[in-house]
Length: 507
Image 1: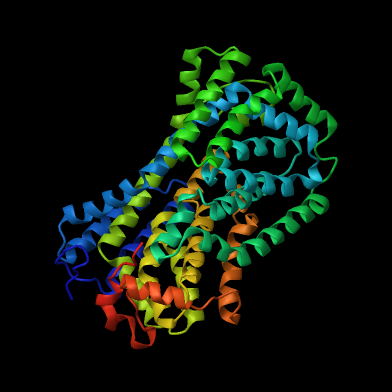
Image 2: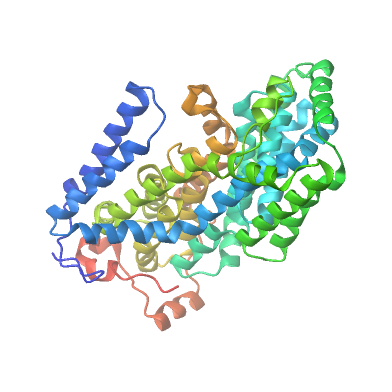
């Protein structure tokens, strides 16, 4: 049947045709990653975009139609790209200012190896909750924690796992986060009800992760592993090359203060860049031209301590370009899949197989995860299932708060666990995991980011046993009626309600 969602006369793809670009892209991606051993997924995803364009033409679309979908999704994501650019500048300038070295220094002096992983998760959670950005937390505090972990001789992947667990938890429940506002918006809920409804999965997953990190600290990490000689060598090198002072934490505190005052993230982060630049000039003697270089190309230093050099020789806008280019290509691929109707066809096929709340909730979470895997975009993995599944929840009589929680967890929390996703690519780049250089063992951070994958698992379990799965209240039902929301009975078959399924929930 013709698709009239956007006034386009093209046909809706069959399930086989909708799956074709996804399967072929995964095959090409597998060849690149596993056969060639080259972790640069850019070209396979670009090929996937081209294949999706061909599918669109088979359906009667023009390339300009596909291009419109590609650029629409890229345009929506530009604020996130801007955050990446600001974080790149912050990393370079905050290293030059002594802010990051000061954090590393005090971390080595105050923390112990046994509690380090648990403390890293808690610290990242608090900062991310305050900032409303997991990426900003990973690129600043997370980077400093990687240096502290190196001083304690903690495996890189353990530290990265704790950082990711904490940072993306804070992003998930912060009212300042864009994804935390997006999930309730596409499902017709308010952000604070959404955050409250995530607590039953968030609290146990964070407690479980905390217990594992504490166990690892006491059982797996040798307290003498980070010997006094090693730690003294690192702290001495930091003191020899930087002025270390609590005052140099002010740029970080400024960014947190602005976030708490609900300032937009980009001006807040850029204020951190300016504050870091001023601190670098006053405390470290940096010149204005050097600051321009640090902000663009990153910081360079040779302390003679390999752990410090590998950590501090980074940052700058250019260091983010690998990630930004991957993000843009992945988003373009996701936009093409959405524009051609491939993702919608797959979701409708799923809805013909599930007719219970437990099945629909599991399908919604799984669809969000699958979209993250295929399209590489956390925003699309929240927006698309949210738009498509909301009418089904209404038809079942369940609150769409269940859906907003499911897509938040399948979208926000799974994003950093997919290496070619925007979130995963940023984590790998910002924390210097060196995957593209052959350090594949550092991908172990994925299973060790315990809170990220455990939370959606707990949510699916709740759906199966009927716990923390609220039914729609009378007020919510009245709101559906007044807003003219689409309502679909899944027992009637999703394909028989295509007109209603195409309606987007009011936001």
